Structures are given as C-alpha cells and as structure tokens.
Length: 98
Image 1 (cartoon, helix red, strand yellow):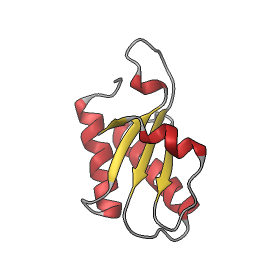
Image 2: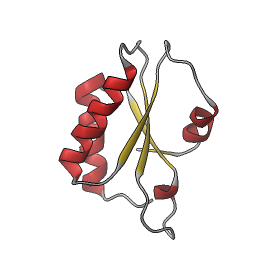
Image 3: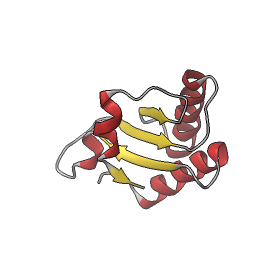
C-alpha cells in the first residue's frame, strides 16, 4: 500500500469528522500496489446512514483530505443505504480497509 501512516491518520480523521466513528474507509485502485507508481488516491467511504447531496459531500471530503495530506489527487466513492451501488462499489469493497 502506497500511503504513509500519517496520510492514513489524516484520511481517517477527516472521514470521522464528517460521518462519525462508524464510517469506514477502504483504499482501492493503483495505490494498493506497492510496485506501481503515481496514481490518485481512490477511497471508498461507507457509512450506515443516508447521505443527502452525495456529490457535494464527496467533493467536500476530497478537498478536506487534500488540504490535510497535500495536493494529491483524491477520488472519493460513497456508499450509504440511500445510494445506488454500481459495479465500482464491488471492486472498491475488495480494497484495503484503512
């Protein structure tokens, strides 16, 4: 996994501030592979309650995470009871739980 301990701490803190301690964060995509280079940070954020305005919430999370860890491209995929799952959600769920 190509994230530092400090980056993981910052990511989890931002998600916890936004959704509470019950939310989980899963890293998926190229950053899972130690041998790969570059790539954005793909995160699946799962919570147990409904999310109103998910596009706005995802954009806000991305911005807050980038402010904490530095200007690296971050993509946030949300999972919640009121959101329709897509095939990417199954792929992301097989990532690394942070």
